[in-house]
Length: 192
Image (cartoon, rainbow, N blue to C red):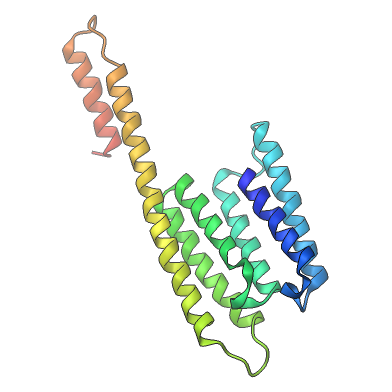
């Protein structure tokens, strides 16, 4: 939540200090960034009180939509807000796993391409480098982040399993009970 607020505030600073970044829709861009700042602050405030604004699975999707809108409102494929997609991919991968990270990566690439092709070019201009290379970078880096985020979650679950196996041994119940309960935990963990 804190990082989301910092990114929202930095986006607000970029739009306020460099209005040439959003040449066409200056007021709409500023309103969108301001709305995202308010949403980020409300999300952080509610998270500190343990009241979720949205289910945890949906917060990174809001970040994807915000990043796509910022790319669309600014300079399309050459927008400085291209890297906001990576924050959503990081959050999805390290909180929900590799599958969710891959979904967010694919959605980010598609939305980036749509925003870039639809809103980014002046008539008669087409930049092959930014149209093909940036989505490829986003897909490659997002896939790597999703892969490592999934491994991080798997390692945390394995450590938790080892901790449960270690803590549940009680000599009063006998070794058969300890072995049986630990085997059940291992079967549940590996879905066997």
